[in-house]
Structure formats: C-alpha cells, structure tokens
Length: 215
Image (tube, rainbow, N blue to C red; front, side):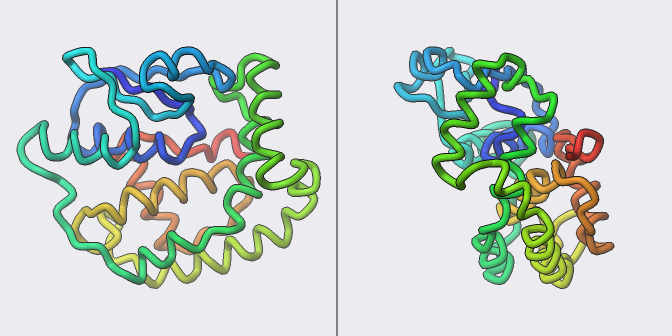
C-alpha cells in the first residue's frame, strides 16, 4: 500500500500513525503542495492523505484510513479504548495551533515545499485563512502562552505514556497529531507528562516529531 501525504499535515499524521502502531508495511509518498493534478486524478480533488490500496483503488479521509487499517490488517484492532470526553474537548480547543504552525511549516525543509511554487501556493492559500504569516509570527509570544496553558490542561489528562487514556484509542490519534504540529515551534514549554507522551507516541507510531527543525 502507498500513502500520499504532506509531511506537515496533521490529518496525514493520523493516517501514518496507524501503520506504525500496527507495524503494517507501506510506502510513504510526499506530494508537492502545489500538485493539484495527482490527487485530483485519484479522488477528484486536491486533498491528502490518500491511501492507494493493494487493489489499486484510492481512499481519502484520515480517519477512514485509520479504521480501514486498524480493522482489516494485522492481529486485531489496536484502537480498543474508549474516548474521554475531556480529551475530546481539549482537542477541539486549538485556535492558536495553525497560527503558530503554518508560518513555520513553510519555512522548514519539508519535502512538500521544496520548490518555490509549492511554497507560494501554500502561503497564498493559508494566509487567506489566518492572515499574513508575518503578523502571526509577530504574535508568537501571546500564541505560545495560550498554547502552553492548553498543554498544562492536557498534562492532567494523560494516564500513561503508552496511551492517553491508558488503552490506545482514537483520542491518541487526534492528540498526537496536534502535538506533532506544535513540535515545529521552537522552545515550546511542554509539561513533563505531555513531553514524555509525545516522544513515546512518536516512537510507537513511527512519525517523528519536528523538534530538530523547529523554528
């Protein structure tokens, strides 16, 4: 199977995670951010992640991919735990996230931005969403303060480094995708349990953090 992604994309992180958590082999293919033709030829629109199945057909939507792999491959499901409503509420409160991450992703050495055309495509689309990247970068101190307060709340919800609720669940997929997005922000202050959890989940899922290229 082949998974088409952007490295920065949190939805792609979700799809990537299940392969690592289940130790299912796959090929990872990173598309250029301005490549409209390739995903459109597969699923009729520019969107990732896209899974190319063994039979050659294509599947979009991150959680559909997660369920397909978890339920159909390996020795039983790994996402067997129940969701915690408090964790779900935490993941739904993230107004700072893209304002911190988007202006940094496009400056980082990510494969989807290796051409100037791909970089400019991303900048034009995303500045229409969150405003000028330069202004968001200038707001970093305030945005980081909000993010770090939010991370403190998460710290009290983590039951184990191995799974946020003690048993792996969809909550782990959603929470780690957010934490991985934040890892592009340099000098973020992570509470002890959050830091241990994000590092362990990166190891388990095979999706590396961006700590080493943080901006």
